[in-house]
Image (cartoon, rainbow, N blue to C red):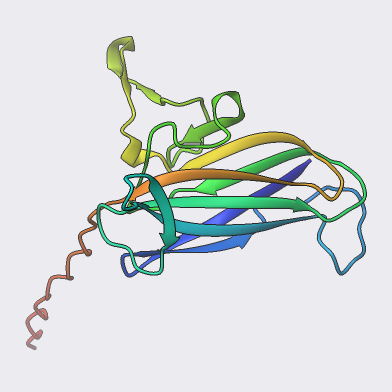
Length: 184
């Protein structure tokens, strides 16, 4: 099984993407200097072009309300198929996952909140009395694809979209008064 994950960081209101392995990798043996599966993560801003069609642009600057598309491309760098490929894509605080935007979707992708319990979307939570309610998409924090087999020297890609939310800065700490001096 190969598990590959992507780390996404939100810094100063801007999402920054980093690719990193999520867990240990069990894959066909490759030269010590090469990784069996490499991951390249790109982020693009989704905008409407002059013709009304969607276009992807550089996401160097983003603001609340912008839609970002994250695309992870997995490449098998070996001459043997890699089996059991699983891809994780975190959704950081400050981003709201756009419903059913994960591709490939349907039976291949599952979502989770910060509890890391993966289920098909839409997620639901259990309430007292046996009732359930839908989990808001703003609470989705991870997507996981079970991609199966990646052919020798082959590539595959997954993607998802999220909207940048307005994030309030954390409140400033309250000034604390020094305790009165103790008298003798």
